[in-house]
Image 1: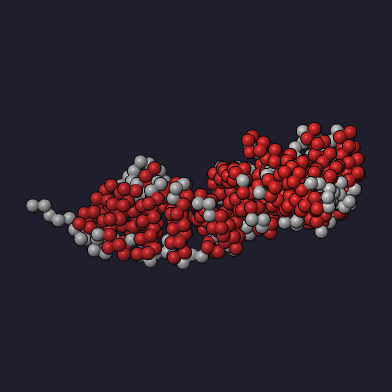
Image 2 (image 1 turned 45 degrees about the horizontal axis):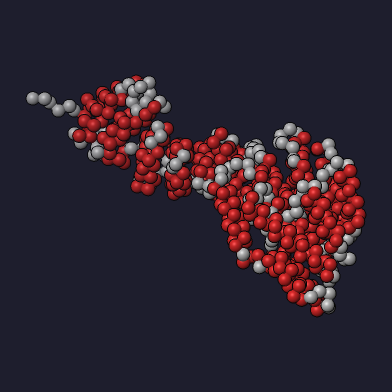
Length: 557
């Protein structure tokens, strides 16, 4: 009969196997067999030998092997044998469990690594090294569809006693934060991504570097995620008109070694401009120009200078306007042409000098500078100040069309405002302008809108409705004064004005709303990380009319 193998014999052979790291993992299978037989015989396994077998069984090759030997499967079998031994799992050290978790993570077995890591923290109350958490989080982030697992790893790290605001002091902690940022970008959780970077920036012991800078530069994936998070957050601030947040995020990007794209710069400048923060918009533009001069970014487009100049004009910052124009001259080697001409037009329009505006536009045409819809609308705005000149306003509409510059709803509104002088002739012109506007609306709905709605659309707004009502009141006074027969006025002049008043209730208005909603939905469905320069350009075009609107409000007062 076979005699039972004594424990000492098993231990002696196991010690021979463990030498030289399981002989380069080649002794993994004999060691596994010994551990399984000792556990089956309920023999106590030496703690050091058992843990050494598991750790030395693992390598950095596929499936955790070393030179094709050992690997994750025999390591797990050894763990199972040790757990079923008389001493049980209490003999297995935190480093042993951690080595298996790391091997599983490197092999892409994220679910199994998560289960074992959770057991270490929740069931056994271990505090694994940060590197173990970082390995699992990195594997989950790399998988692309396991972003939630990254957050669970970070929650387990916190449950183990680690603090987010201090782990950035260690390389493993920064790797963990980097995986968190990557997962936040994958989930489009901008607040979480920015919070993790802020936590990294607070970590001590990173000097002369910053913790958030080191996190962003830890890998190409981390740098991409950080860039996209800042870009999307700036876009959100741009949509919400939160200029302070937009500027702060832009300032943080170079501190984190991130390079803002042209669309990011434009959105920050445009956000400041929309909020009429002329000094901040100018400061951001000058920073952009300085970086361009150093060869670090692309040149600011001419339209951005136009936006900042308009904002300075609105805010009454004449000295600042001159500084921006001087910078534009150096950057683009131009005097400004249409930009400076429009500034002059707006200043003349505020004075109500319609004839000077006319002379300036004629001069622009003679010099080969093509006036824009803003130029013509501004000239018409001069006609709307007292004393109003509806004849010249109507003449401008005809002139601009003849030069293939199409009026938009701002232009039509300004021309209608020029007709409110109480005279029947002006009322008749207002009716003609209303009829032409309705024809343009029909064409827009038939052909579709190409470009910015603020810059190109002729769809009436609430101010159009107000002006049409005022012209109808003026028409009523005209027939009461005996200037026109009431029935003739109602059947002819009032008809297009009434259509403008009731436009919001018409099928055409419903169609316009429907198309606007479809365009908005199409934008939202588009790629979220495309440099949407077209959207910013539309905002810049819209800002061109801010002065015209301000001029209009002044006329009403």
